[in-house]
Image 1 (cartoon, one colour):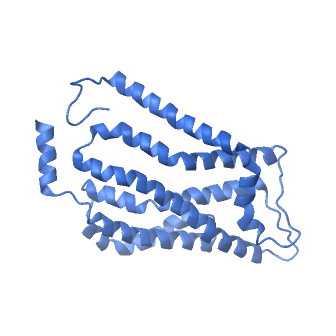
Image 2 (cartoon, rainbow, N blue to C red):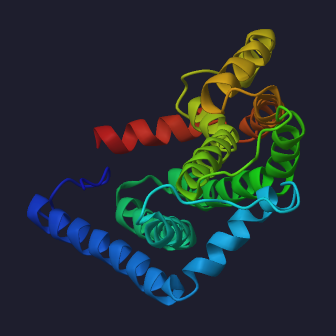
Image 3 (tube, rainbow, N blue to C red):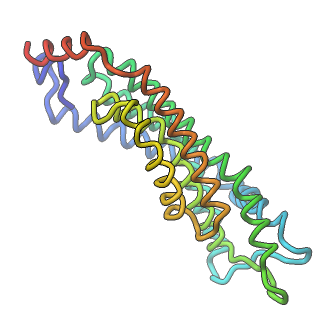
Length: 257
Protein backbone atom coordinates (compact mmCIF):
# COMPACT_ATOMS: atom_id res chain seq x y z
CA UNK A 1 0.00 0.00 0.00
CA UNK A 2 1.38 3.42 -1.00
CA UNK A 3 1.68 5.96 1.78
CA UNK A 4 0.47 9.50 1.17
CA UNK A 5 3.48 10.92 2.90
CA UNK A 6 5.96 8.95 0.87
CA UNK A 7 5.69 6.60 -2.04
CA UNK A 8 8.43 4.02 -1.90
CA UNK A 9 11.14 6.02 -0.20
CA UNK A 10 12.48 4.62 3.06
CA UNK A 11 11.57 1.35 2.08
CA UNK A 12 8.56 -0.50 1.19
CA UNK A 13 8.07 -1.84 -2.28
CA UNK A 14 4.83 -3.13 -3.78
CA UNK A 15 6.09 -6.68 -3.23
CA UNK A 16 6.59 -5.97 0.48
CA UNK A 17 3.03 -4.71 0.77
CA UNK A 18 1.70 -7.79 -1.02
CA UNK A 19 3.58 -10.01 1.39
CA UNK A 20 2.16 -8.09 4.32
CA UNK A 21 -1.34 -8.34 2.85
CA UNK A 22 -0.96 -12.10 2.42
CA UNK A 23 0.31 -12.45 5.97
CA UNK A 24 -2.60 -10.51 7.41
CA UNK A 25 -5.12 -12.41 5.27
CA UNK A 26 -3.74 -15.74 6.48
CA UNK A 27 -3.93 -14.44 10.03
CA UNK A 28 -7.62 -13.61 9.52
CA UNK A 29 -8.35 -17.06 8.11
CA UNK A 30 -6.46 -18.70 10.97
CA UNK A 31 -8.45 -16.77 13.56
CA UNK A 32 -11.72 -17.94 11.98
CA UNK A 33 -10.44 -21.52 11.84
CA UNK A 34 -9.39 -21.51 15.49
CA UNK A 35 -12.77 -20.19 16.61
CA UNK A 36 -14.55 -22.73 14.40
CA UNK A 37 -12.55 -25.61 15.88
CA UNK A 38 -13.35 -24.35 19.39
CA UNK A 39 -17.07 -24.18 18.64
CA UNK A 40 -17.44 -27.30 16.46
CA UNK A 41 -18.23 -29.51 19.45
CA UNK A 42 -21.16 -27.23 20.32
CA UNK A 43 -22.53 -27.01 16.75
CA UNK A 44 -25.79 -28.78 17.63
CA UNK A 45 -26.33 -26.58 20.69
CA UNK A 46 -25.69 -23.44 18.65
CA UNK A 47 -28.28 -24.50 16.12
CA UNK A 48 -30.78 -25.26 18.88
CA UNK A 49 -30.27 -21.76 20.23
CA UNK A 50 -30.82 -20.28 16.78
CA UNK A 51 -33.98 -22.34 16.31
CA UNK A 52 -35.44 -21.30 19.67
CA UNK A 53 -37.44 -18.28 18.37
CA UNK A 54 -39.26 -20.56 15.93
CA UNK A 55 -39.61 -23.58 18.21
CA UNK A 56 -41.16 -21.44 20.95
CA UNK A 57 -44.10 -20.42 18.75
CA UNK A 58 -44.67 -23.69 16.88
CA UNK A 59 -47.82 -25.64 17.83
CA UNK A 60 -47.37 -28.28 20.49
CA UNK A 61 -46.12 -31.51 19.02
CA UNK A 62 -44.60 -29.83 15.95
CA UNK A 63 -40.95 -30.26 15.12
CA UNK A 64 -38.43 -29.10 12.56
CA UNK A 65 -37.57 -31.62 9.86
CA UNK A 66 -34.63 -32.47 7.59
CA UNK A 67 -35.58 -33.14 3.98
CA UNK A 68 -32.00 -33.77 2.91
CA UNK A 69 -30.03 -36.77 4.19
CA UNK A 70 -26.92 -34.76 5.10
CA UNK A 71 -28.61 -31.57 6.37
CA UNK A 72 -28.70 -32.67 10.06
CA UNK A 73 -24.90 -32.75 9.90
CA UNK A 74 -24.08 -29.86 7.57
CA UNK A 75 -26.62 -27.25 8.73
CA UNK A 76 -25.22 -26.92 12.29
CA UNK A 77 -21.63 -26.77 11.01
CA UNK A 78 -22.55 -24.19 8.39
CA UNK A 79 -24.06 -22.07 11.14
CA UNK A 80 -20.98 -22.57 13.33
CA UNK A 81 -18.73 -21.35 10.51
CA UNK A 82 -20.83 -18.21 10.09
CA UNK A 83 -20.77 -17.62 13.86
CA UNK A 84 -16.98 -18.02 13.79
CA UNK A 85 -16.71 -15.31 11.13
CA UNK A 86 -18.94 -13.02 13.17
CA UNK A 87 -16.89 -13.55 16.33
CA UNK A 88 -13.62 -13.01 14.49
CA UNK A 89 -14.82 -9.74 12.97
CA UNK A 90 -13.12 -7.40 15.51
CA UNK A 91 -9.78 -9.11 14.89
CA UNK A 92 -10.35 -9.00 11.12
CA UNK A 93 -11.07 -5.28 11.30
CA UNK A 94 -7.97 -4.78 13.42
CA UNK A 95 -5.87 -6.44 10.72
CA UNK A 96 -7.49 -4.24 8.07
CA UNK A 97 -6.79 -1.16 10.17
CA UNK A 98 -3.17 -2.16 10.76
CA UNK A 99 -2.64 -2.56 7.02
CA UNK A 100 -4.16 0.73 5.87
CA UNK A 101 -3.11 2.94 8.81
CA UNK A 102 0.41 3.78 7.51
CA UNK A 103 -1.07 5.30 4.35
CA UNK A 104 -3.53 7.60 6.08
CA UNK A 105 -3.29 11.24 7.10
CA UNK A 106 -3.24 11.99 10.81
CA UNK A 107 -6.80 13.30 10.81
CA UNK A 108 -7.96 10.31 8.75
CA UNK A 109 -6.57 7.95 11.36
CA UNK A 110 -8.71 9.68 13.96
CA UNK A 111 -11.75 9.01 11.77
CA UNK A 112 -11.10 5.55 10.38
CA UNK A 113 -10.16 3.82 13.64
CA UNK A 114 -13.48 4.46 15.43
CA UNK A 115 -15.44 3.82 12.23
CA UNK A 116 -13.87 0.41 11.68
CA UNK A 117 -14.64 -0.79 15.18
CA UNK A 118 -17.93 1.08 15.36
CA UNK A 119 -19.07 -0.76 12.25
CA UNK A 120 -18.57 -4.13 13.95
CA UNK A 121 -20.58 -2.94 16.95
CA UNK A 122 -23.43 -1.81 14.69
CA UNK A 123 -23.32 -5.08 12.75
CA UNK A 124 -23.64 -7.06 15.99
CA UNK A 125 -26.45 -4.72 17.01
CA UNK A 126 -28.32 -5.48 13.79
CA UNK A 127 -27.98 -9.22 14.36
CA UNK A 128 -29.14 -8.91 17.98
CA UNK A 129 -32.12 -6.80 16.91
CA UNK A 130 -33.11 -9.42 14.34
CA UNK A 131 -32.84 -12.31 16.81
CA UNK A 132 -34.45 -10.76 19.88
CA UNK A 133 -37.05 -8.48 18.25
CA UNK A 134 -37.79 -9.48 14.67
CA UNK A 135 -37.72 -13.27 14.92
CA UNK A 136 -40.23 -13.65 17.79
CA UNK A 137 -42.72 -11.29 16.13
CA UNK A 138 -42.30 -12.63 12.60
CA UNK A 139 -42.43 -16.33 13.55
CA UNK A 140 -45.42 -15.81 15.82
CA UNK A 141 -47.19 -14.10 12.91
CA UNK A 142 -46.31 -16.89 10.47
CA UNK A 143 -47.54 -19.55 12.88
CA UNK A 144 -50.82 -17.74 13.56
CA UNK A 145 -51.79 -17.38 9.89
CA UNK A 146 -51.17 -21.00 8.91
CA UNK A 147 -54.32 -22.42 7.27
CA UNK A 148 -56.33 -24.92 9.27
CA UNK A 149 -55.09 -28.45 8.77
CA UNK A 150 -51.58 -27.35 7.79
CA UNK A 151 -48.88 -28.81 10.00
CA UNK A 152 -45.89 -26.51 10.53
CA UNK A 153 -42.69 -28.50 10.00
CA UNK A 154 -39.88 -26.26 8.83
CA UNK A 155 -36.82 -27.77 7.15
CA UNK A 156 -33.66 -27.03 9.13
CA UNK A 157 -31.64 -25.98 6.06
CA UNK A 158 -34.40 -23.67 4.80
CA UNK A 159 -34.72 -22.13 8.25
CA UNK A 160 -30.97 -21.55 8.45
CA UNK A 161 -30.89 -19.85 5.04
CA UNK A 162 -33.87 -17.70 6.06
CA UNK A 163 -32.36 -16.45 9.34
CA UNK A 164 -28.90 -15.90 7.85
CA UNK A 165 -30.46 -13.76 5.14
CA UNK A 166 -32.17 -11.68 7.83
CA UNK A 167 -28.98 -11.47 9.88
CA UNK A 168 -27.00 -10.08 6.97
CA UNK A 169 -29.85 -7.75 5.96
CA UNK A 170 -30.16 -6.24 9.44
CA UNK A 171 -26.41 -6.23 10.02
CA UNK A 172 -25.83 -4.34 6.77
CA UNK A 173 -28.75 -1.97 7.39
CA UNK A 174 -27.34 -0.98 10.78
CA UNK A 175 -24.19 0.30 9.00
CA UNK A 176 -26.11 3.31 7.67
CA UNK A 177 -24.52 5.83 10.11
CA UNK A 178 -21.05 4.68 9.01
CA UNK A 179 -21.94 5.10 5.34
CA UNK A 180 -23.37 8.58 5.93
CA UNK A 181 -20.31 9.74 7.88
CA UNK A 182 -18.00 8.53 5.11
CA UNK A 183 -20.07 10.21 2.38
CA UNK A 184 -20.04 13.51 4.23
CA UNK A 185 -16.34 13.20 5.07
CA UNK A 186 -15.36 12.63 1.44
CA UNK A 187 -17.47 15.58 0.30
CA UNK A 188 -19.92 13.42 -1.67
CA UNK A 189 -22.77 15.08 0.21
CA UNK A 190 -23.46 17.16 3.32
CA UNK A 191 -25.74 16.73 6.35
CA UNK A 192 -27.84 19.67 5.13
CA UNK A 193 -28.44 18.05 1.75
CA UNK A 194 -29.35 14.76 3.41
CA UNK A 195 -31.92 16.50 5.61
CA UNK A 196 -33.50 17.98 2.48
CA UNK A 197 -33.86 14.48 1.02
CA UNK A 198 -35.52 13.06 4.14
CA UNK A 199 -38.91 12.34 2.43
CA UNK A 200 -37.16 10.33 -0.28
CA UNK A 201 -35.13 8.49 2.33
CA UNK A 202 -38.26 7.42 4.21
CA UNK A 203 -39.72 5.95 1.03
CA UNK A 204 -36.37 4.42 0.12
CA UNK A 205 -35.88 2.57 3.39
CA UNK A 206 -39.25 0.86 3.00
CA UNK A 207 -38.35 -0.15 -0.55
CA UNK A 208 -35.00 -1.50 0.67
CA UNK A 209 -36.76 -3.30 3.52
CA UNK A 210 -39.03 -4.96 0.97
CA UNK A 211 -36.06 -6.07 -1.15
CA UNK A 212 -33.80 -7.31 1.67
CA UNK A 213 -36.32 -9.24 3.74
CA UNK A 214 -38.75 -12.07 3.05
CA UNK A 215 -42.14 -11.04 1.64
CA UNK A 216 -43.92 -10.23 4.90
CA UNK A 217 -44.93 -6.83 6.18
CA UNK A 218 -43.60 -7.39 9.72
CA UNK A 219 -39.93 -7.99 8.91
CA UNK A 220 -40.05 -5.31 6.20
CA UNK A 221 -41.38 -2.71 8.64
CA UNK A 222 -39.05 -3.80 11.44
CA UNK A 223 -36.10 -3.27 9.08
CA UNK A 224 -37.32 -0.02 7.54
CA UNK A 225 -37.98 1.83 10.81
CA UNK A 226 -34.51 1.20 12.33
CA UNK A 227 -32.94 2.17 8.99
CA UNK A 228 -34.75 5.50 9.10
CA UNK A 229 -33.73 6.11 12.73
CA UNK A 230 -30.13 5.16 11.91
CA UNK A 231 -30.22 7.58 8.98
CA UNK A 232 -31.20 10.37 11.35
CA UNK A 233 -28.45 9.36 13.78
CA UNK A 234 -25.93 9.26 10.93
CA UNK A 235 -26.85 12.78 9.79
CA UNK A 236 -26.36 14.10 13.32
CA UNK A 237 -23.01 12.33 13.75
CA UNK A 238 -21.80 13.42 10.30
CA UNK A 239 -22.06 17.06 11.33
CA UNK A 240 -19.26 16.41 13.84
CA UNK A 241 -17.02 14.71 11.29
CA UNK A 242 -16.79 17.35 8.58
CA UNK A 243 -13.27 18.23 7.54
CA UNK A 244 -12.21 21.77 8.26
CA UNK A 245 -10.59 23.99 5.65
CA UNK A 246 -7.31 23.82 7.59
CA UNK A 247 -7.28 20.03 7.37
CA UNK A 248 -7.99 20.10 3.63
CA UNK A 249 -5.20 22.65 3.13
CA UNK A 250 -2.80 20.52 5.15
CA UNK A 251 -3.57 17.47 3.01
CA UNK A 252 -3.00 19.47 -0.18
CA UNK A 253 0.35 20.68 1.11
CA UNK A 254 1.41 17.13 1.93
CA UNK A 255 0.34 15.87 -1.51
CA UNK A 256 2.20 18.69 -3.26
CA UNK A 257 5.30 18.53 -1.12
